[in-house]
Length: 437
Image (tube, rainbow, N blue to C red; front, side):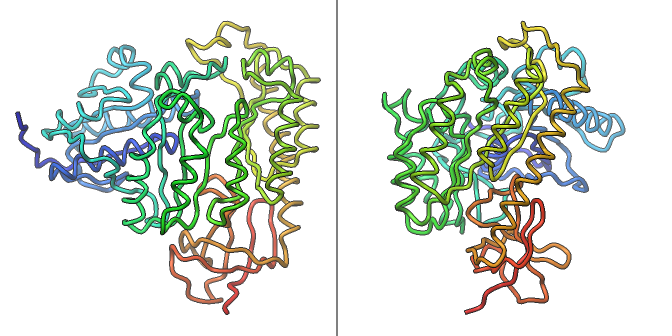
């Protein structure tokens, strides 16, 4: 039975990671197919209904989600909006608690409830809309989610309890979505999931990431293909061979190692040891010497001693990651580590986070200075103030370095590729001039 679509104006707020963003884009596509007007993160929009796609991963993200919900509930009380709906990870994980604590939300939906949200808004969910999304990123790049959930059991991570087991999407379905993205003008496709290294093991009984990357990189119109979140354990080495062979596969390896102390790695249930990490990183650099290495670390994990932490700093100094992020450990309900004594004081955690970022800042400046005088193919993302801002293949949107080009230098179209000669380097930015041929 068809439902009657609403004339209400919808404003969708998306919090958290790029995987959440893709869910928001899919929901917007479904609403559009029902002729339901939806805007994205418009603070000044005159919306009747607000949908908040929440994050429930770590403490700070959860707090941001809760504060956002409360802000819009207050707007509802003041008569500025009619309804507030909450979806996503926080809602999936804490639905009962949220219903009891924030009663003025009209309805809470989990991570797999897009069809229910569409129905609630008077629409009809259409399964045949594979890959149909409303892109919220600049039109020249897009995230492409190839799997949902995670089968790993890292002691600190609640994602398997929120998102469920790893479910790979079929290769052909992903290729169809990639083609539709290309038709929309997307030039850079960024593959995401909780764990790219696990792709295909559930569906095809073998790792299919190399085959998927092969298919996608062969599509006409894919100028850059970027891979995010390659788990170190069972790392698909064949992908590196493709990266070396194909010019349009970015020389960019995003591998979250989290720690290097064997004692901490064992407690984290990561499935690999310090020596395994070093060997893998050596292989990466041997096969793709030009690859930029990105990682994430956790410090302040239960039982982390000064010796463990020093190992982490020494590791950073030896490997010299091009890009690095760090989280202070926060206990998460339902995880194995939640049962451990959170014995590193918050002040010490923050000191360790600061020390890691101070070291990484110096490493980044050193590596950036080595780029001065060289010319790089650069994708232009936006114009801001006196600069045109882009990225090299070694940088992912929002999280990595940027290339700043003076607007006085030349007129450059957003979404275009240009050659930029680096003239100056900062800790996390490069400055350059457009090399016109």
